[in-house]
Length: 177
Image 1 (cartoon, rainbow, N blue to C red):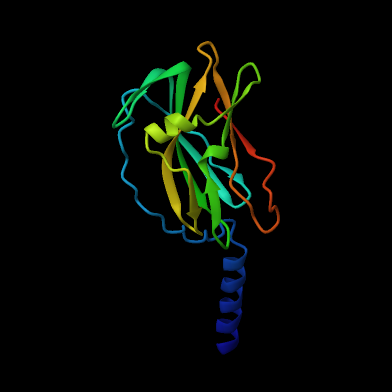
Image 2: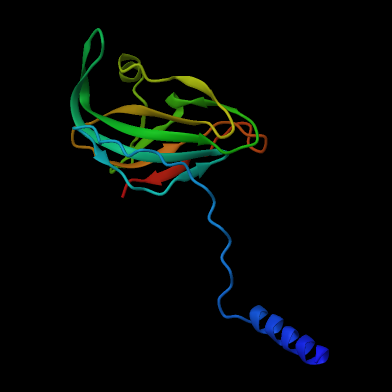
């Protein structure tokens, strides 16, 4: 009788191990961040996150064709058109980096590379440089002044120096669609 029970138990163990359906590992817990309304002049972007070095970039909003900006003390006219990106950066490395918002670039449909507009960033009180720590997530706007007929096609993102790339010379291109 004991032998029969041992054989049956062994067969059951073997059958369980040969099951076609493997047990799935439990899902990792996630934060529930509340959804927010998109700003009236903005289009929500649903692009996959991009990585440059130890920095993750998530473009979440785009506003193009803005003729001017209004700050707390001034109104500022575009030379062409302002383009604004809502960007989330997240530190993915083992240590922090000095993140420079002014280093980001926009590539247009004609291939022109446009730098962040410093005056627009200052008027809209957006950050310049800041320490992006491990696991830290920061959301802000980037402003560019493009020719009126230009269309933005790529955001070239620079995460900052890492231990393996101290100069961070190559950015990561994020295609806008």
